[in-house]
Image 1: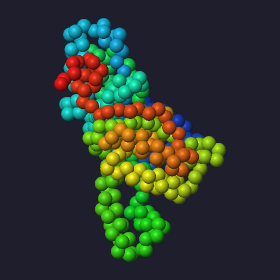
Image 2: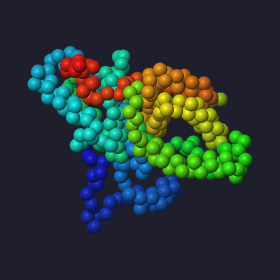
Image 3: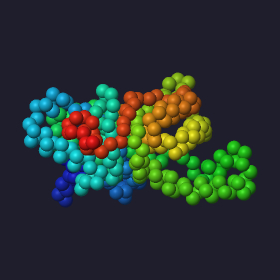
Image 4: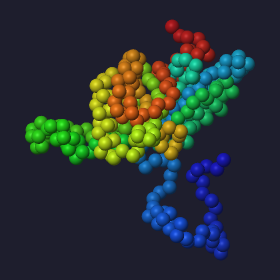
Length: 312
């Protein structure tokens, strides 16, 4: 397979590469290409990181067929592949124990380099345990700052719409506070830290395109209003639940991925249930499969799945 960064060999000067004839059909594309001719080509996004959610199950029959030496080396390489502080580790790496029959464990990986993200998956499959690993689900996305995160000006206008008096002391204090935290808030969406809370769930989602329920036919002002209501519901869980929304439009079968971390598992249920009553969800959202997990070390995954002896 050709590396994405590889470039074709240069053509000899006497034999320039053929170019398509200019036609009206190509005019718009040519103008667009010319406007971006100076932009650097790369597999890294302009802002933010690539993100993958990967889920696996162990094939117990194949595990039983491995020699003791192969199994021991496989366990060593498994630990190394999922070590968030290892020499080949991506910027963010988190491992989950997954209950039920959808998977035995999951991995969430983020980095600006998509090949470094996918390398975690490839190392798992290439190791001695690879023949006994069954990938059960994956989701590919990018971190982003949603268009519904208000600018300082939009936040100020929203305060007035909600009854604040423009330029009052209360108004100024709120606007200044939002202005101070906005840059960090946006950066946290593009290059997020993974919270240390132990309970997590992931699910993909779409916005509907049905007749009478087509999210993408609504004006931006109405979509923004609905998302503000939705966000207000989520803020009630501050300190108990935190979330990361990643975008998969054009990258995977669903449009967004939602990852939730909570201090307690019942709060995952509570926030999802509560927010489904918001019109943005109740009327316009479609949800994919849910994967529940418990944040764990590779060692804990191996012990939980009985590949090694449980300590203590």
